[in-house]
Length: 95
Image 1 (cartoon, rainbow, N blue to C red):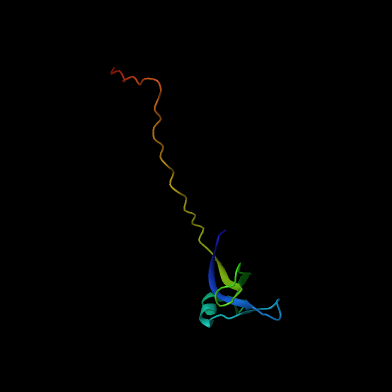
Image 2 (tube, rainbow, N blue to C red):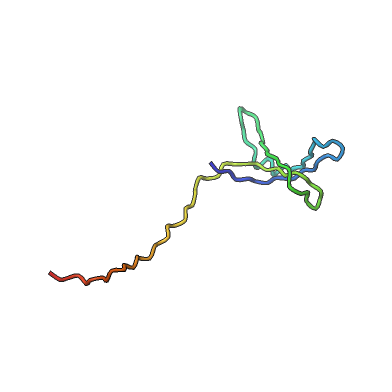
């Protein structure tokens, strides 16, 4: 199963408390990916630390993963050129 990541924001690690990361999301982005479960609305977010901080000092990124269509486009098979026979080809005999 494949997933499509919809990036919705970035966060910054707290300088004093390194185990806390503050994220800010646009409400419209969260509403677009909200889903209902047992009569309540939810948003599931995945986060990851970036390799290097961006130009604003943000250290983490957040996204919502959704199942992508399982359309796996396979490349068309390559056509092979006919093999050249080392033996001399004889012309067919009419009957």
